[in-house]
Amino acid sequence: MTWAAVWDLRESFFAYTVSFFWLGTMWVNMHRAWHNVEKINNELVWNALLLLFFSSFFPYTTSLVADNFDNSVAQTMYGIVVLLVTACNIWMYVELKRINNGQTVEDGFSILDGRGMIDVVLKVLGLILTLTVFPSAMMWAVLITAIFIVLPRSI
Image 1 (cartoon, one colour):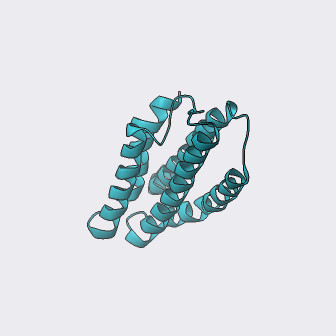
Image 2 (image 1 turned 90 degrees about the horizontal axis):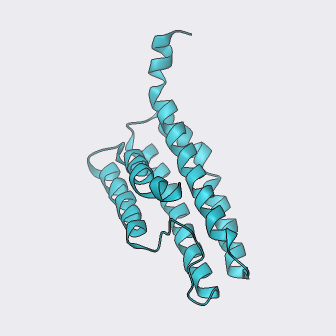
């Protein structure tokens, strides 16, 4: 092992780091959202199952992106998983609000507010760019939304 070999792994480390902190931030926000929940329903249980299922693809798609960082197919697969997890989060927040009589239960970040919707739009834009002109755009979109939208509201 040499420092040059470690440097050659930079895209792998980058993909792992972005995925780890994206999932970690999602976990923090879910913890905060569920902290004040007093009741749940069957729909939320199924939502949690789907969220867990889609999240289970992260190690696989992260390894694809790590090994093929500038490949639009790998980045697209990663982006689809990101957007499926995001869709489950939107569904979760909508359902939590519905069963709590319109009251929001989360502290800080909510994907249902304006900045949360910007998060979704930037991820979709990242996927479109990945499919058309900039293969690594999806990973960058996840990083940008995490740093500038999600993380500051989670701390």
